[in-house]
Image (cartoon, rainbow, N blue to C red; front, side):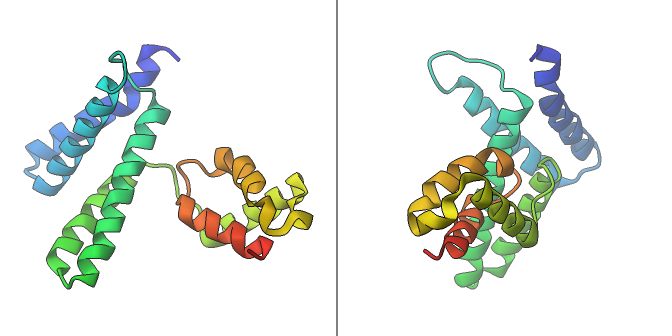
Length: 158
């Protein structure tokens, strides 16, 4: 990939943050600033600094969105509604930059198809690893790994 392709997603985030700043949209501005900080941290992690590809940026944003969703659950369980709402709003903003998420029905269909492709049906629960390995590229960034894993286990009778 060329650098111009790599910079598209990051540039979009920067442009949107600038627009939020001008619009005095504090929540959007702080959420996008946090996302850009997470991207920068990922770029300087490892042996040498490098620019992330759009796919890698989507992975970072997906991880940040997942943290927000987990926080929403924790805050709701603790009765901290205002904090849960803020985390949910941040997750919603991050979701705008992520690929469309698969529905439960779409995940189930993909799992069924992958079990058939891999011949894992006769392996039962021992086929989970085989199916998950084949599924990963199909669902990466588009579905929560826990939801996919649960569906694989359900269909394989684990």
